[in-house]
Picture (cartoon, rainbow, N blue to C red):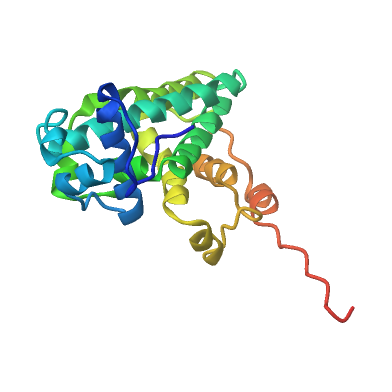
Length: 230
């Protein structure tokens, strides 16, 4: 299960989990509005508590957003660990697993994903400025790249720069809705997240496939649909 995303509904809680209820409601607002455009007063109303009660858990909205960002990166790391536990032993298998983890996290945690990766407002930028909150998630990717380099599958180079490049494929995929992806030709039936990740790897592989292999594997013409009157 991902982080809760429902908002606008009063959440039952005991005194010891009001903080979690506030965080869940905030993530719901962010997912619905694709923005942290909500007030703490509005958040209090959504959870059925008084406005001052919010301040017993968060000094201000910036503190809430920083807590949500830290929680989101911790959850992404959990997704990574689950997928890595299912992966094969090779570094390339681990890269595939991390690609899958990123896509699944984005789909199941839209509020957290938008806060972590899709928003550039000043208040969110301040919340995400703590490098420590995403260090573990980033290290998983860097470790997999270094393993691929040691195994001779990925070219030499700064693994952090390679990580910055490789994350763009799953990120782009995650940022588009299913309808948007279909409109630009990456419908799941034609171009899955895994295929997109494999294509992104090609420039950094030590033994990349030939243009003919790339065309056949990823871009082969779709079979013609049978005619309705046939």
